[in-house]
Image 1 (cartoon, rainbow, N blue to C red):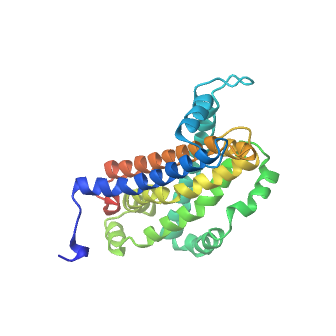
Image 2: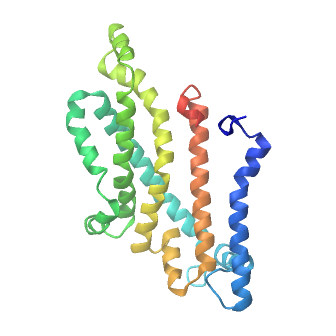
Image 3: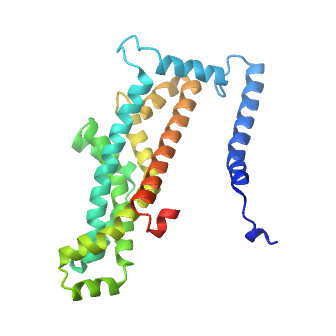
Length: 271
């Protein structure tokens, strides 16, 4: 049997999925044990016990100055900013993509604009955002919005252009107005694609959030990582990075399940 035709069973698929992670953990902890054996004060590759101690201090011990549990406070602050940014970007991206892909008069001006905006590096305009919006929450949220909205809008625009003209013509033949076409024909086709597009930009959204928090913030996951880097506190940095990865994966899983449940008829929901 050709390799291209061989499909793993469910148990084999699970084993193959876990294998790379097990290999990475083995390599890391082997290197950590070796370095700590040579130098017990080594900070580059902390052991599991060192990371557990650091996380116990941050997650389950009140901070002496503020009385807060720093780990959970950082998580709540970052998720709040990320949720606001993604929510606003999703609404703006859907509206702009819908207009550019469905209405030719709007598309003639919006499409080139979106193409240009999507090429602007969002991190390059971060100082401008801080100058315009200040160092508060708004600038951090706006970085996420500016960073992912053009990408979402272009994706939605392309999907809107792929809708067969036969559907639009038949709806107009039955007396559908422009708004009826948009709400009853076009929008249901674009909503599942929006959820899939959000999955694709989650990594970029986290990147913009961490960058903004690292430069100007007093709390948040990105703030804590860049705060302790000066002490080479890898026992804090590594768990925080793993926690961010887990949160991003859970968000991706949630969007995937929402797409399957809300739009089971959409072919992309199976991915």
